[in-house]
Every structure is written in structure tokens, then in C-alpha cells.
Image (spheres, rainbow, N blue to C red):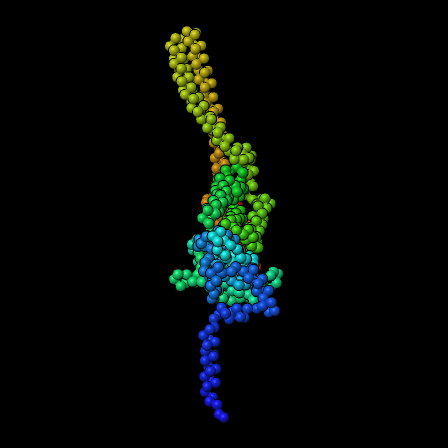
Length: 477
């Protein structure tokens, strides 16, 4: 007896269609959920450490919000280095927090402490990362935040998932971005990262201004950056020292960079080995320069001895002589008037005595008047002599110290008695050139330059050594 093959085939097709129509993802997930024999306990543990979506929604995870932990404020303009970024994921993540990796501008942020889940003050459950800068991610932060043009930088956020949690000190496996979010305009979700606080930037600027004022402002009225070859000159008239200026230049540059980097990054380990080397070279140059000035017998030493022979050991002695001249000028003026009056009285008395030859008292009065006039004259001449002697000392002082008086910072540091010198100009130019490179490096990398080669530092050292070596034959006047 033959059977119709179409009947069973049609029946099988109808059964398959009916089964497919009754299939749902939820039912399938429940049917495939592991039981006690296939790892159900592991899944229960993961769900204990991960937040559960209150809405019970399903689908591909996405980033729905970027907030500040623990306040729950919007991340825009509130997140900076060392702050905590809270990432809200919808639906709630199913993995332990340690398996998630943070990406900023599609670059993995390495070296962060393991992420964790927390409930924010606004009631939202979020995955939290603390944004820190360290040796593992310094290059990333440099690329993200270097060469700032404003107080904020826009960063996009993404998440990756490691197959297993990363527990230090084991090597963490890299991950790809698997979770993203979009804003209302369909652009990748991100936030405005706060590069700097205007308050702390103001504090840093005030501190740097105080240092600059202390070093450069004080140098105008003191010998901080001056040679002090002749103690008889006032500090403001002493010539500027190239070696001391170079030392102060690097000191101010390094400390200003340190203060600003600390205000921006809250990192006090920013002084590089190259910065220390530059400060060391400048300090050694200044010390050697002073030692040469002390050791050699220069023309300035001869002038110093000559001024000491005149009684001028320090500028205080010069002030004393000027005060003595000033004090005697009124006395000289009074003595001149007294002498003039007594000379007139003596002349009149003598005329009266001559008119009465036999009058003894008139003759005695004329003699007394002439004696008083002579005494007044001697006093006037004595005061004039004292004033002239002191004026001669001051004139000699001006003549001898004139070659050692400052003629302005640039001329002082680039010239000696013979005019501009190559070794001085070389030190000045290399110092300014490396200083500009240093400042650009701090601005671009948000770090003190660590890439000055040994050759470049050696070049700076050779220039400084040449300057010190040429100071032996160099004349100070």
C-alpha cells in the first residue's frame, strides 16, 4: 500500500512553523540558563557584584550617562585629574567591575585602579573609574591634554571588556571598545574634561610672581645677580653677572614649571633629570666664576686698594663723605657771610682810627675788628679746604669706579673691557635657546622635558666651561 509523501512533509513543516512562532529570546535565555550542574552558582556570584537593571530591559549595553562620583553631577566641567568618573550603563552590566576597561578618545587608559560599582547620591548605579596620571598612562594624558588652548578638553568615552578581571601585579590583557554611547545629536558620548581650576591657576601665578619678584626685582637693588667687584659701589650700580643670571634663569624656570604642573596635574614628581642637570650646570658655572674672580688679581682689585687708601672701604664710607660735604656747605655759607660782615666792620673801624690818629680806643677797636675778620677768614678757608678735600675724594671715587658701573643688563653680560666677547654671547644664546625649548616642552607635554640628549647637555656644559676658562685672562675693566 503506497503512502502519500507530501502529507508527512507538510505536517513536519507546520510543526516547525508553530515552534518558531512560539519562540522568544526570554524563553530561550531561560531555557539555556545554567543550572546547578552547569555553573549557575558562578552566574549568581557575578550578578551579586554587578548592578541589576531595574527596568528589566535587554539588548546591547550602551553608555547612557557620564557623571561625577559620588555626587551624581553631570561630568561636563566637573571632572579633572584625580576625580572619579561614573559611567552609567544601560542595561546594567553583567560582568564584575574589574573586567571593564576605560577608553578616552578611543585610547585605553592604562594603570588605573580597578573599577568598582557604586550607587550615586542621585540613586543611579554606576561603574566608577578614578582618573589618575602615572608612568603607565603619562603618554596618553600628554596626547589628550598637552598644548592646551582652553581650560577644558572634550573627551569621548568608551568601555572595553576583558575576558577575566585584571588583578595586579599580573599583566593585564588588552581589550577592544565594546560599549559606547551617543548624545542627542548622534555623536559619541563624552564630556568636557577640566584642565585647570582658575582658583589654583591664580594661586600658582601669584606664587610664581612672588618668586620672580624676589629674584629679579630684588636684583635691581641688591647684589643678588651682580658681580660686586667693588664694595664701594652701591648695589644698584654694580654690573650684572652672566653666571649668576644664568643660575637664576634656570631656577625660576624650573620652579615656575613645577608650580604650574602641580596646579594642573596635582603631581609633585614632575622635576626631570634634565632639569636637575641644567640647574646643576648653571650652579657650577656661577660657583666657578666667583672662585675665579676671588683667585685672580684683577684691575678691580687695584682700584679697591686705591679707594681703601682714600678711606673708602664700603659704600657706607662714600655716603659718609657725601654727608660731610652736605653738612659743611651750610657752615661754609654762614662763614662766608660772617667773614664779609666782619671785613666791612674792620675796614670801617680802621678808617675811623686813621681819621683820629691820637685816639687810642679807636685804634684798639680797629685792631680787634681786624682780628675778628682774620679769624672769620681762617674759619671760612678751613671749611672750604675740608669741603674741597672731600670733593677730591669723591671725584677720584667717580673716576676710578666709572668702568665698573652697570651699563644695563645686556651690555653687562655680553661685554668686558674690550667690548662684546664670543664666549659670553655663546652662553647667553644657548641659555635662552634651551630655555625656550624647555618652556615649549612643558606646555606641549605637561611635563618637564626629559628628552634633552646627553650631547645637548654636554654642549651647555662646554659653553659654561669655556666662559669660566676665559674669565682668567679677561679684564674686569
